Image (cartoon, rainbow, N blue to C red):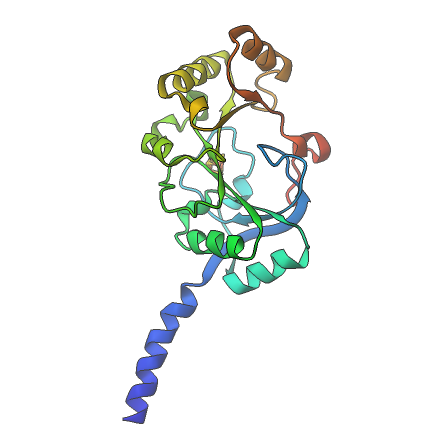
Length: 231
Ligand code: SF4
């Protein structure tokens, strides 16, 4: 009887332990390089894996590898940096279902939490305290068919939609979807040039000429550290 009870509790305990783990590429402390929280000292938690393959992806090193880590362990490392801002990124963090628990736990620990997500996976269950920074993929990314348009209905005023622009055609597509879906009335919209594809000044001038209700942004971490991993 005792043996039976022990094996039953072991069997139920094992999945609970597994449920608390996530595959992590890196955790590091840096300056937030983009979006609304730009400039804040921030701890980045980069989850491993992404189901997309954007042609200009700058974090391909996060597609594979990584290390399984418990959520308590992740929270302890985040806390060790003493930063209020935490950004959960990837890869595509929502590709790991337990990311939702991590986000919740980070909010419970009183962090200002942001989530960088591709826009291809459902964001409906993300804790409403989290600021979502959600991409919409323009055609030159090669992944625009993956945009999950129903996600627009789950955006909150503190969220942000980011469109990365690699050409004039991308810009015109972005201008069209912002108008068609009135995205600027839901939340902040960010237009960002692909490094080496569109001159930043050119994109800024297109936005001014068309008087678009969007915010131009350059990725600060690229200017400061040329996009080195861990920065
Ligand atoms: S969604 Fe992000 S991580 Fe995934 S391929 Fe595109 S840019 Fe890279």
